[in-house]
Image (tube, protein in one colour):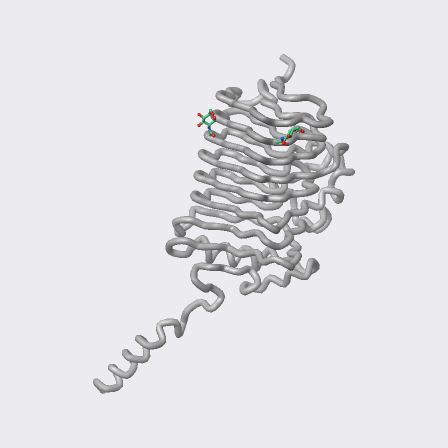
Length: 279
Ligand SMILES: *[C@@H]1O[C@H](CO)[C@@H](O)[C@H](O)[C@H]1NC(C)=O
Ligand SMILES: *[C@@H]1O[C@H](CO)[C@@H](O)[C@H](O)[C@H]1NC(C)=O
């Protein structure tokens, strides 16, 4: 009996990975290993969510990989925290394409909603997001979603994200403290309505730098409850410019400490401005 126990014990020691999650290697979580097809036709949202849940629930540092040379069709999805992982990096190397308007189950605030995740880094080098806005733009009285929303994400870093054709705003930053956006490229047609580049709401210590934004509405809009927002080295246009507001119609109408430096405005309706509702 004793020898059997020690045999089992030795076996357990020499094969510590007997029951390991083989889809995870060194803290890397690749959505392909969670069933994503990446053929541009199958909806890969569930695989993406499973890979997110593993990354979010990991101990220590986790990296979620969306690999290059694939096109992932995604219905709307929510990546929710708080996470056990101390830091999470999302490496977006492949192409994400939104499901077309008629395939959406119901109204969603955003195509990709990232909520309550602290210490997140998104590196979009080589990758891209296509919001399939053309399936929405002609519907002028539809409630349209933004492409990607960061909700209550503190200590956020987003680099080299490339987003085209959002149904509405391309990036929303809501209720975040401490975020740096760098090398962002946003592009949608000049004649599309409400396709803001980056919207900042109720957020603090935000730095948007070295980014290129061409869209149908404000390149950047900084709204109620925001403070300490810097925009540097950005190219805006076409678009409506870089705006504070609109202010005067909501609960929190204060915007403080905004700096816009070294930015170019090309073919824009305005430069930097403050928008208010008529009283
Ligand atoms: C904004 O710029 C000012 C002046 O250059 C700097 O003191 C401040 O730390 C910056 N804030 C952010 C959030 O980048
Ligand atoms: C702004 O325009 C100038 C002159 O064309 C150019 O040198 C500079 O790199 C541009 N800056 C940005 C952020 O696009």
